[in-house]
Figure 1 (cartoon, rainbow, N blue to C red):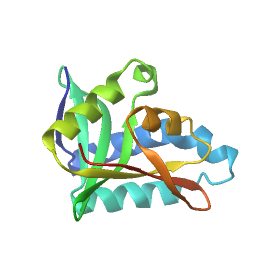
Figure 2 (cartoon, rainbow, N blue to C red):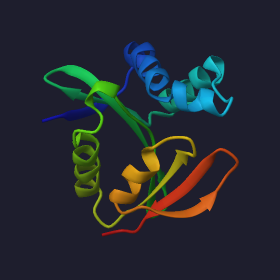
Figure 3 (cartoon, helix red, strand yellow):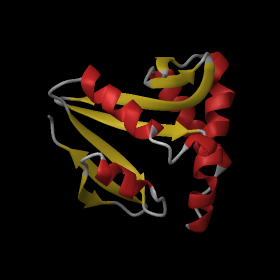
Length: 142
């Protein structure tokens, strides 16, 4: 089982490091890894109050962020410890989020070089647009 809690300043370096462990290889493949940019993006999300820490047995195992966009929720910065990926935890967390926000549709940007697109398609997302480095995906409300 897991729980979510708001990220605090004390969590910042840990969630930043997690985002780098998760994304660095994918970003390097497209020549887009920039530690200062990654730090600035995670700082922006923390200061906006959108970041949450995913914990299991009191230990941080991931993070995610949510921004309301009218009837939609924008999901961002959904990172799980690499050793825990591919075991159903991401789907479990997303199902829980959907249950907490019934009737909402979802929106996410997925890095083109990341295998995450297949994961999000399995969660009911479809491709609705393309940006230079990202796929834009949406999931209708239940």
